[in-house]
Image 1 (cartoon, rainbow, N blue to C red):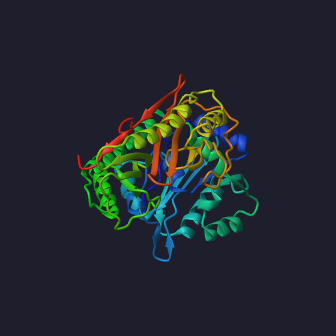
Image 2 (cartoon, one colour; image 1 turned 90 degrees about the horizontal axis):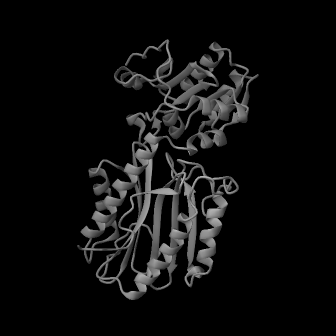
Image 3 (cartoon, rainbow, N blue to C red; image 1 turned 90 degrees about the vertical axis):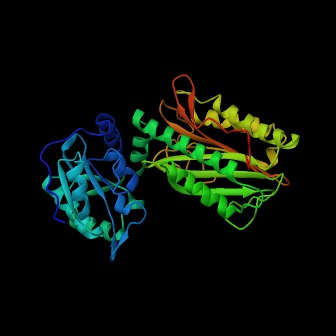
Length: 395
């Protein structure tokens, strides 16, 4: 395929330019050099090249999409992509004035990025990179070609950029949650006595795919086991089922957990799930714009601490969006290894949180609820708000 020609004018910018410019200024960044799939997707208004949706490797190298954005200078923005993306541009033009759909690997992409930075007079600028998503060979090329440039870690700035969702992003997250919830409830109803974990997971994959979601994973437990990996273990009468699934809709994550039981739940099961729900509701009661993230966490943890199930139950909350754990980061190393940098900051309107309470009961098994909520001025809006009780298997 021939290299797609660049453009000369700025199309509609798909993000809030003034906010991004302000965040760049605060971070001391002149030019963004975005290379992760999630940040290039964000900066391109939701675009993701389907050919490399599942795997980046090709030939001796890998796909490396690059979005270059100069603070206050959208007329200098560029997208550097794979040669096959010229067809994408012909059908749905990228907003960036410059496009290089010309690459097959990391070095040719990095070299084109360097040439563009030099062309716009930013060869000695403060360049914001993503260290965890910039291959070492590309980094070395950039460092040698631009010896006077200052390379700055833009990870935190980009996380803050994505923390507050647009209305379009909220709708995608809502849709993702609805599709995942419907798929889980359908799968629980489908499963029968004797159905294996492997078969249940495969059924969930089909349910999500048939509804238009992209299946990511399913963490599943049956009975008293706390093991969430696929196996030949079969569901038995009277046992619980915990189904925790992540799938995405146009790149945005739906990540929820619902409970099933094969038969009718006994009084103990009803009581145990009610304990989990009490902690969830405690967290929800503190979710609103202006509340410190840490105050929401502390309140839920205090309610859990007073519970009779505290010794084997855990509470956790985290931000979500294009990736499963993103800003706001509310807890430190619990369990994912990052700092709770947003605990002392107020929640803001249109932040999206995953709120989860997990019980590892020694006899009754893995009992958990995980919900998705968007922060509003007066409280929260829950996505996928159904099936939060005991759902009957074989229904």
